Image 1 (cartoon, rainbow, N blue to C red):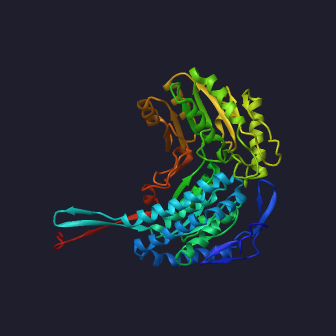
Image 2: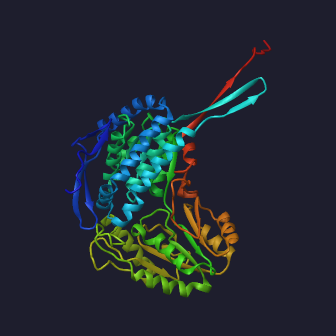
Image 3: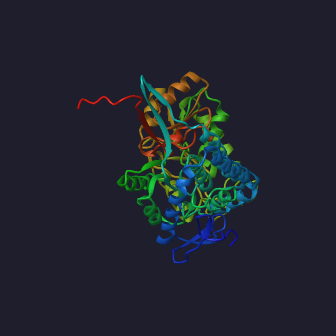
Length: 483
């Protein structure tokens, strides 16, 4: 067990174990080796975590924002100092190459803590003059927030949720995915070492039943979920029973549109990053690549050539560019989508098989001549599988790009910036890129529309989702009553 934590949960400032909970086996995807053995949170652990969060939050909300900020800033500095160690843990937990986790996982989490540390002290109310009287507003924390994480970016997601929640005076009880449960425990440990009072960031492990217990508890004011659309629907409905605030960052089937005047190498590079990075296990991936017919053949030929050069291998090897899928279940799902794409008439132009390494490795795969009604163009695969569709006109591709229940992300590649702005203005997606893809700096809001979610993470927009406004009317003279 190369990554066994001190205990399964982190509650009220300390590691906590309760072996009565169901066993969670943590497997290193590259080898199938069990690297840690945890237990699900029992009702007693869940209750202790929520009670501790509620008690700690009251004093935390009364703490000066600059004092809260200093703690988060120290945590960000600690993460950066320990990035090598933390990135290795992330690779063991997820199977992602170390060259990815060292630059895109914990570093992004540190950026979030630092950003919200700087932002929180600037969050103020306003004064509204009414002649003699006036109204002033106070932006208050919500209280106890529940965070539910996904398995693809476990530590980044934990930070993205914890940073705005804590900086704005809330407490959080966080449940990571049972597939990748290790990073959140380290975040809790780091925050306490940085000076965060006990109880403000608790981590409890478990499957869906633990999440359901958290979401429906009366002490919870807000739920923030990163996950699939089906999970989002269940959690959203459960949260609605208690009229709780929600942020839902769900799945996608995002379009990446390449016009014939685009820089070909950049567009291909973005399509590869938007389909093969993290073995394709990214919710915002541009998995429907629409290529204008004038450059379709050149695009496909060059894409196949560059795809063949991707290095698969041991995720802990710095030279490895693509690792395994996270679990056997996910591997089987992706291979089934590849088989279905071939059966439905997709033309295989790259990959398409289990990699020679065996295990849970899938070759980076691309299908051309995909049509809108094919399964590969409609459903989220969450693996290294690209669908290439062709188009002729701007109006046509916009209509086809929008013809989906999803609306998380979209990208446009063109040398005509006026067209780029015009097209993203008509695309039904919460996060868009022009001549770039999948760059998500913490300064910019991130989230989707339609079935891809509600609310926003990151940026100033996150303040709206972790606080509420109180209005105070101030009378400056006698009350004029008719009786």
